[in-house]
Amino acid sequence: MAIKIEFNNPFSAEGNWYKGNLHTHTDNSDGELSPREVISLYHRRGYKILSLTDHYKLTYGEELKKEGICLIPGEEIDGGQSAAGTSFHIVALNITKEITFANKEEITAQEIINRIKAENGEALIAHPYWSGLTLHDILPLEGYLGIEVFNSTCLNSIGKGESSVHWDNLLAKGKRISGFATDDTHGYSEQQYHPMDMGKGWIMVKAISLNRETIMDSIKKGLFYASCGPGIKNLSIEKEIIKVETSPVSSITFIASASQGGRISTSSTLTQAEYEIRGGEKYIRIECADNRGRKAWTSPLFLTNQSGEYF
Ligand SMILES: [Zn+2]
Ligand SMILES: [Zn+2]
Image (cartoon, rainbow, N blue to C red):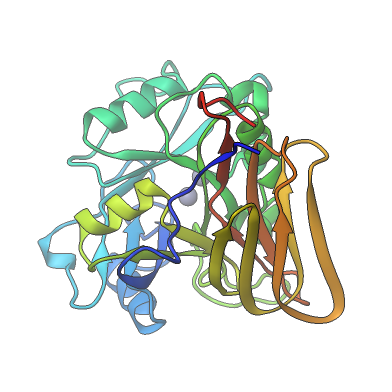
């Protein structure tokens, strides 16, 4: 089988692992705590990467810098309109200045992405499930890095935290996009029947050092995995066999286009699984879940033939 596997493998890339949250609010918009308090909280919990993404506000500056945590300038921008009449929320990362629009009712999602790119930034489509977006809404968009496959606040508030079907539909249509897990933190305290948003969805980035440029470079290449709990320890590909090692989980799923792929699950625990590529998968991404239902997601591997078409 002449399959080409296109995948930037973070597990064989040089560097260290850094934990990060790319979607966070402070009291500069509708978050509960000040930027300094938010940065300190994440720093204390071992995060090394944080983006404060206030609504239409760039919360970033020399005065917020803190040793040991890399701040990525960010902003959350809403606008455009889905077929259902809801708006897109788009997270802007690593922008050079605050983005504003004279009339946000009249802009399109693609215009938001274009503006983010014009400010040297990168765009993530935030919480598609919560926003009521469908494949039809997202498919025409170009130039964004990926979507939030998991958003903690959207799970805690209305049970629409996971957008994996959106991701799969886009991957099956040939979109080479990443899946991110984020907190989208607004509240920072545990309440009855409403767990804290913070610390529930993150990415583990493999990068050669902890600074904005190298971290962004790794994120753009897909050198990370997303998680709500489980750790992914290794992913290797030998011939046509993909092997994955994880922290103790109860299922490991190899997700591919349509009815392709496979799942290994147990009522006890698993720490590894393998999958032999059969042909026809188009893409494969690995998702594992622990016995509390918390998941972790690898970046997708793309399978192509010699002419670069999906296999
Ligand atoms: Zn949002
Ligand atoms: Zn948000």
